[in-house]
Length: 121
Image (cartoon, rainbow, N blue to C red; front, side, top):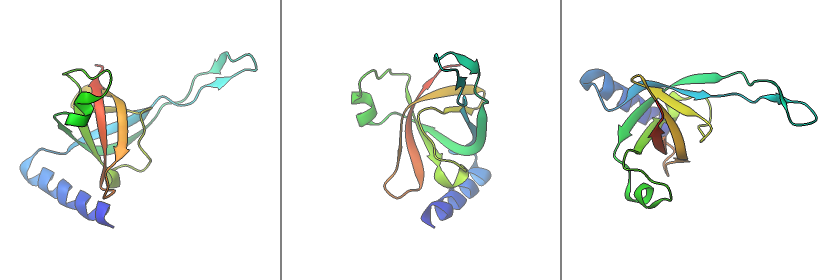
C-alpha cells in the first residue's frame, strides 16, 4: 500500500540524514473498571506502541482552532509505523518530552496522522 511505501521512504531518509522522523511512543492510559456507583475500582492498564513522528510548525487551520497556543505543534505520525488507530486519548512521547494530542486526523492519502499537540512535560 501507499502508506507502507511512504513509511519505508521516510524511514530510509531519516536513517540516512537524521530528521525529520524520530522514534516515539504512542501511549494510552487504559480504561478503568468502575463499580455500579461509578467509582473506579481498578485503574486502567496503560498501553503503548512504538511509532515514527515528525514535529512541525502548526498549520493555519490549527492556529485558527479554539484554544490554540503558540507553543502547540503539528505532529505527523506515520500510519505504517503504528499498529493501532491513533486518537486524542493517546500521548506522544519523543525525545524526552510528552505531548497531549488536541486533534488527530488521517491525511487524505492515508500515509499518516496529522495531529495538533501540546507539550505537557
